[in-house]
Length: 174
Ligand code: SF4
Image (cartoon, rainbow, N blue to C red; front, side, top):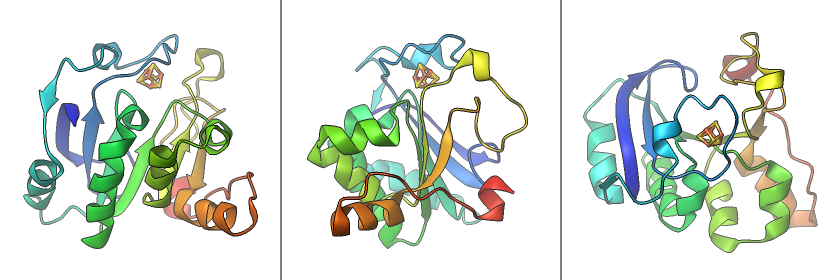
């Protein structure tokens, strides 16, 4: 994976003490983006899933891992494998993407769908500066949603429901 950086003690990318993995590469071009240095593709550090997991394990207080960027969805084939191992090790996995849930569900890219099956929480949608807010937890603009990704995919796989299940967990949205 092409990784822009890793922060081992984040408190702004989800509840509790988390490790945040910033993926390199994003083509959404949101006006007012805070991470423009992560837009170009393939220009940062190549890291394997096991190298990233070793870094995550170094902080024994870390219970959750957030995949951010850039946009990890552009590297879904590798990100899905990373998410699977993190889930197996008991971490809560969250993912930030500039795509909307509906865009990801309807394009039917199997790597991206499998990534959605292996993350607990998805924060979706581009940053829209006109909808910028400081009121909503863990979101930059009010169009972005906090979605129960794994549960929504179980529903989609069972009966084809496209509409996502929105997260109501107080620690995420309270
Ligand atoms: S999706 Fe995120 S990283 Fe990409 S341009 Fe928008 S705000 Fe920036």
